[in-house]
Length: 87
Image (cartoon, rainbow, N blue to C red):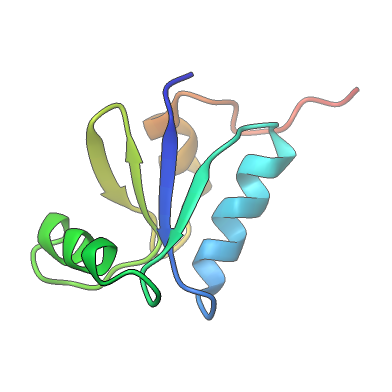
Protein backbone atom coordinates (compact mmCIF):
# COMPACT_ATOMS: atom_id res chain seq x y z
CA UNK A 1 0.00 0.00 0.00
CA UNK A 2 1.19 3.49 -0.78
CA UNK A 3 2.14 5.73 2.12
CA UNK A 4 -0.66 7.46 4.01
CA UNK A 5 -0.14 10.77 5.78
CA UNK A 6 -2.70 12.12 8.23
CA UNK A 7 -2.76 15.85 8.93
CA UNK A 8 -4.37 16.13 12.35
CA UNK A 9 -4.72 18.09 15.59
CA UNK A 10 -4.78 16.75 19.15
CA UNK A 11 -8.30 18.07 19.84
CA UNK A 12 -9.98 16.59 16.74
CA UNK A 13 -12.47 13.77 17.39
CA UNK A 14 -12.67 12.85 13.71
CA UNK A 15 -8.88 12.45 13.71
CA UNK A 16 -9.14 9.94 16.57
CA UNK A 17 -11.83 8.00 14.67
CA UNK A 18 -9.69 7.83 11.52
CA UNK A 19 -6.62 6.64 13.45
CA UNK A 20 -8.67 3.95 15.23
CA UNK A 21 -10.23 2.87 11.91
CA UNK A 22 -6.77 2.46 10.36
CA UNK A 23 -5.26 0.70 13.40
CA UNK A 24 -8.13 -1.82 13.48
CA UNK A 25 -7.29 -2.75 9.89
CA UNK A 26 -3.51 -2.89 10.41
CA UNK A 27 -2.92 0.12 8.15
CA UNK A 28 0.18 2.15 8.95
CA UNK A 29 0.35 5.91 8.52
CA UNK A 30 2.42 8.96 9.29
CA UNK A 31 0.76 11.59 11.44
CA UNK A 32 1.54 15.31 11.28
CA UNK A 33 0.00 17.66 13.85
CA UNK A 34 -0.79 20.89 12.01
CA UNK A 35 -0.88 22.84 15.30
CA UNK A 36 2.84 22.10 15.64
CA UNK A 37 3.85 22.42 11.97
CA UNK A 38 2.98 25.71 10.22
CA UNK A 39 4.01 24.34 6.81
CA UNK A 40 1.61 21.41 7.23
CA UNK A 41 -1.16 23.80 8.27
CA UNK A 42 -0.52 25.84 5.11
CA UNK A 43 -0.74 22.67 3.02
CA UNK A 44 -4.09 21.71 4.63
CA UNK A 45 -5.45 25.17 3.94
CA UNK A 46 -4.25 25.05 0.33
CA UNK A 47 -5.71 21.62 -0.51
CA UNK A 48 -9.04 22.39 1.21
CA UNK A 49 -9.78 25.72 -0.50
CA UNK A 50 -8.73 27.79 2.51
CA UNK A 51 -10.49 25.62 5.10
CA UNK A 52 -8.60 24.14 8.05
CA UNK A 53 -10.17 20.68 7.73
CA UNK A 54 -8.82 17.85 9.83
CA UNK A 55 -8.17 15.13 9.32
CA UNK A 56 -6.85 15.75 5.86
CA UNK A 57 -5.41 12.60 4.36
CA UNK A 58 -2.75 12.30 1.67
CA UNK A 59 -2.61 9.05 -0.28
CA UNK A 60 -1.30 8.24 -3.74
CA UNK A 61 -0.66 11.90 -4.51
CA UNK A 62 -4.23 12.89 -3.65
CA UNK A 63 -5.63 14.81 -0.69
CA UNK A 64 -9.08 14.45 0.87
CA UNK A 65 -10.68 15.52 4.13
CA UNK A 66 -12.55 13.03 6.28
CA UNK A 67 -14.50 15.47 8.40
CA UNK A 68 -17.04 14.55 9.46
CA UNK A 69 -15.70 11.03 9.86
CA UNK A 70 -17.04 8.82 7.08
CA UNK A 71 -15.85 5.20 7.17
CA UNK A 72 -17.25 4.49 3.69
CA UNK A 73 -15.31 7.40 2.17
CA UNK A 74 -12.15 6.41 4.02
CA UNK A 75 -12.34 2.76 2.94
CA UNK A 76 -13.08 3.73 -0.66
CA UNK A 77 -10.39 6.40 -0.97
CA UNK A 78 -7.71 4.17 0.58
CA UNK A 79 -8.95 0.96 -1.06
CA UNK A 80 -9.15 -0.91 2.26
CA UNK A 81 -11.80 -3.06 3.91
CA UNK A 82 -14.74 -1.27 5.46
CA UNK A 83 -14.96 -3.92 8.18
CA UNK A 84 -11.83 -5.19 9.94
CA UNK A 85 -11.03 -8.85 9.50
CA UNK A 86 -11.44 -11.13 12.51
CA UNK A 87 -8.54 -13.41 13.39
